[in-house]
Amino acid sequence: MASAVALGLLCAGAASAAPPNAADLEAELVCPVCETTLDQSTAPVAERMKVFIRVRIAAGDSEAEIKDALVAQFGAGVLAEPPDGGFGALAWLLPLVGLLAGAVAVALLVRAWSRRDPPSGGAPSERLDPELERRVDDELARFDG
Amino acid sequence: MARRARLVGQGVAIGLVALLFILLAWSLLTDEAGTLAAQANRGDRPAAPDFTLERLDDEGELQLSSLAGKAVVVNFWASWCVPCKDEAPFLEEVWRENKDRDVVVLGLDSKDFRADALRFAKRFSLTFPLVYDGPGDEASSFGVTGFPETFVLDREGKVVAAFKGAVDDEDTRPRLLEAIDEALET
Image (cartoon, rainbow over all chains, first blue to last red; front, side, top):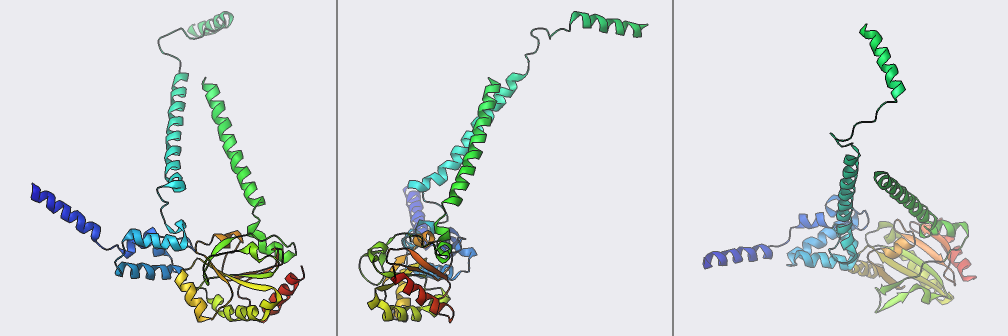
């Protein structure tokens, strides 16, 4: 049991120590000029950033260190995903809030619409005017022969 | 109850659409930075946005408004920009020949690596003040959409002229020098 736990910890440690993948990073970072991800951009500054990423990976930097270095140069806008904290958290929260609000609105509307249907087996439906009903009966009697 | 809910919902929807239209109108009417160059070239002399940026050529920061009283040639550039390389020697020449006339050439490096900007400055032996705007926020506030772009400010910090593209060609050089003379007349 203890050896299994130790083996698991070793594997986790090895995974976290693995060098970052340049292609993955390029998909997570944005060209500051053309505002597409680096893997889709051929702008001169994007090419320069790709070289920077490869140089930093070769130097042993972690993914977080590389991203931090690029944010320090170009600002938080270079991250394809907004940061989790601070104002960037709104980018994550607002769509969820909107979805929730929409679901609540739909639920309320469905409930309101379902209440419009008259209850079955209850009070009798509205009756015709007695004079009109008599005339309808007379007309129908003519067809009965 | 259902009717009231429907009316409330319709009111909210109309309110949201109205708010969006108001935001659109406000954005269009207050987009002064986007038309800074156009205003300047029409002769309106709009005030340039002030900024404080870290120096590339020295320690500390530089605030644009601290240059009040001088004509300032604000040049937006980046080391990866090809026309910027073409005009750099001319801008250095303008700086050297006019700094005794209350003229400052200020290079604003934008969307660039600091190390690349410093190499560029060394390569072209630039001696005029250089500041760093990595995220490009100040470039955006000036309405810059591409590099290079150059603004000539008068002694009160108002934009006299704006030039998109390199300023070292036969047509633009004399116009830049005329703009500097005009800026000094304030």
